[in-house]
Length: 151
Image (cartoon, rainbow, N blue to C red; front, side):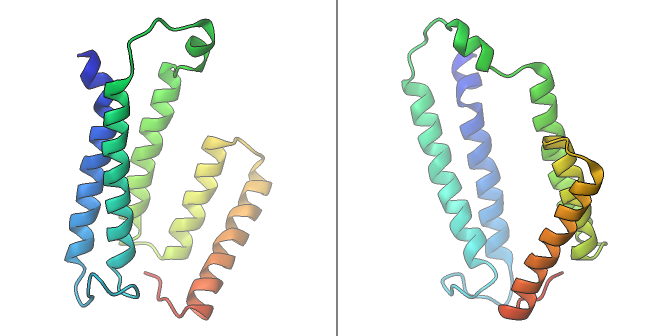
């Protein structure tokens, strides 16, 4: 049980990476080895994540079971931290799903506003300004300079 608990993040990383790799192979109309193709970068990222997952599992299995010092106990996650991580993961999935029925700009601005609020807790007006400006800069750079069409 202890081994599974320690290696679970690496296993989850590998599973998610395999799904990403599979999805990148399904992108039609592009060659996988063509760097300008739509499936190239997601495929590379998935391969890197698979390697990181394997390294994580190996490192976790090598660790010796030791008693936690007071400093390590303070650094461990609480239940509220796990809840935040899980809810943020669900939020990311909802963002990706929202891209199918909302325009990119609206989805991404809303995603950034809520993300910054959840993770940083800064004031709303600062949050909105940062989110809108960031998305507009990214949109301009990629759509105008690199001629990439957004969903």
